[in-house]
Amino acid sequence: MRFEYYYIRPCVSTKTETLSFTGEPQWVEEVGEVYTKEAALTEAQEFLANAEDAIGGVFWTVYGVDEEGLSHAIGDFTTFDRAYEIMSAILMPMREACTLLEQATTGQRPVEVAHVILDETCNQSTCEWRL
Image (cartoon, one colour):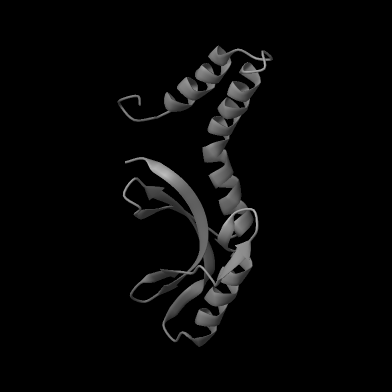
């Protein structure tokens, strides 16, 4: 499995299922249709206020979308900020490598440094086999 996209949604658990909320999409000129955390949170809070079988309150889940477009929950967090912090930590090595590759095209930093960052990130696995 490989995640091609990540996102964060507010969630509510009931006695039988966990529901995630997107809110109504809004149009942003630079990127098109997007779902905002505020709209999603409002939707989750409205559901929670009317649900008789809700357990706990609203929490935030980081999801990864695989090659087939299926979403997989990665982790649950009590706040959006904490979920965003973890998602950013997952993506940061790739962002750093991209920045270095961009700089390498202008002669500022070697491509080898970007390779080292990506290689070290892949080798940080605690499983028996390295990626």
